[in-house]
Length: 173
Image (cartoon, rainbow, N blue to C red; front, side, top):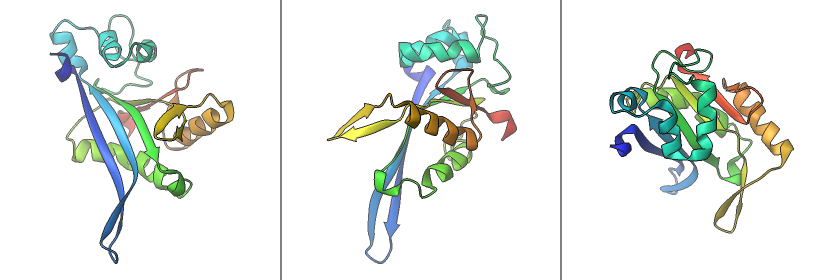
């Protein structure tokens, strides 16, 4: 079943004001966990996993796996499961306060201890977006893209060649 091959997970980040007994949402993380082993057992290829999420994401797969399905050890750890980070979002008034860095640093621990998942790598597309009204709109501003790539690089991600994709090999964490 395709739903078992790619499982979706969400974290919502809140700020709690104990004095006022109030919580405010300050961010969120959305991820897709790809079960490479189950895909191979059920006749799907690793490229199919990425294609099931979004055909555009299939392009990053060629950097992570070869056409025989063998992982690129530079990006993918021994556990060949892939966790694709669809979105990390921090509300504008809480940006540049270290919250994003804290989330990115704590994400591997949360994934392993709370979700009980063992990804071989985390992958994401450095794709900044802005909120217009209630809609998220990606930006093509090269300065914002490079700033986001530098942010993830400072936080342990490795840029995948000259793409906007970054990966973190979980063997080294």
